Length: 270
Image 1 (cartoon, rainbow, N blue to C red):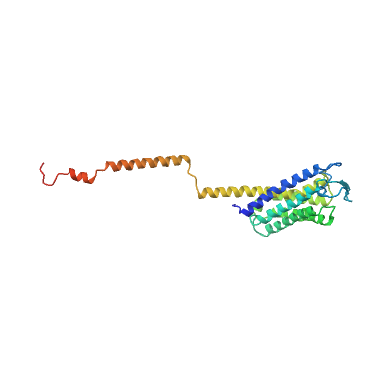
Image 2 (cartoon, one colour):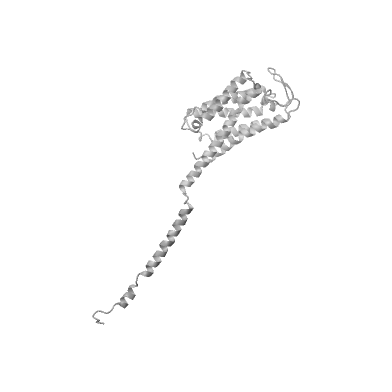
């Protein structure tokens, strides 16, 4: 599959989204002091909260994120990368109703990342909750749906990867909204629900770039075939031999004018 330039840029956007988001989670969490940030006890949203204090009446916990601007900016940039990847690689992923519906749902999940960054939980809880629904609800239904795309499409050929990521995210969402920790805490369960989409997009971007580069290289090789070095040498030697033979043949043929001078005149008895 030869990728168009927009699709190649989209794949690069996907490739960058997951590492950026994961690094921001780690770095922002390192800024916490008393208590330190816990991936088990704290939500991802806690990293973006603007104020310090007890947060969440259903699960009270102390939240104080000194580097919250970094996390909220990362939400916005991650949203931009995921949405740009979907838009630019829209046609490269294939056609059909299933593909388009899945793409649209994942697009809404990307918008959810933007809402989460623009409206931290302690600034506008309702809009932040809407962001969570778009990411962990709509997006995590769209992801396994993408795994059901026809096998003739890119998504269909990556069915195992897509279904694995989608079902993991969907199960994580159900358990998180049901407040079921299953030994990893609700903070850990939220990550099971949120991380698969950007990680899947990163893998898909890498696969698209690899297959696109290989297709371009094969196409150039078919258009301009390379001659092996031994064949070049052999062809050169053959040309030299043929040239030398032509020269020898030209010198070996007698000149017609000279032949006529050596021939005795008619009737000459000598």
